[in-house]
Length: 217
Image 1 (spheres, one colour):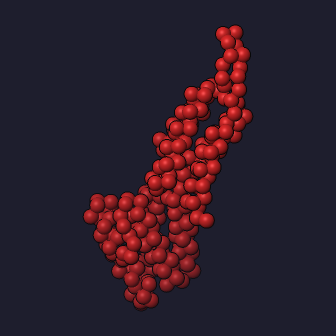
Image 2 (spheres, helix red, strand yellow):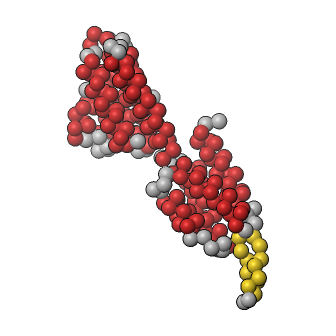
Image 3 (cartoon, one colour):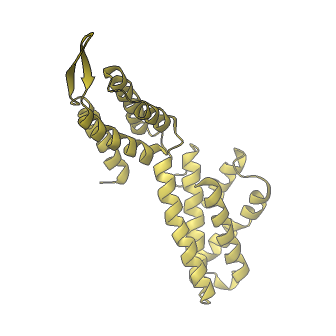
């Protein structure tokens, strides 16, 4: 099962669990009042908050809204209903694909590892291996970023992806100038034209991917 599917399944499980949070009656001088049982709320809200942060990040409106309810919790059924509403909204948005935090975090970590590997290969005079790793990381990073911006990258070459990013104004300035030469380096690496690739070219790709990951992932 893919991680996105596991997250979606967990949303479903916790939403169902929210319907089973217990309530009890408290006797006050003014009369009985219904309250949410704290232990079941604490367990569910902790799991829910962790899942929302994982899927959307701590800066998302879903996380901020849910955490605000948790921070101001007074055992009220009305607060529980509000928490369920925020959680349900997060679950629906995730199901519809409106999430970036999780996939970007995974991508950033993964391609950061590739960049470090390419650097080591270059330091060990394995220029050709470093070129293949760096160019593969570059192409996949650009495609993932394009997908996050609702650009169709299926069956599209790296040059097509670069052009699509530039046409939408997502790549500009110094990045645009640097990126213009990279599809050619990528083609040299993927077609084993080693004599056409210099160590400086590989360093250029590595440096670009590093900065791109910092900016967008």
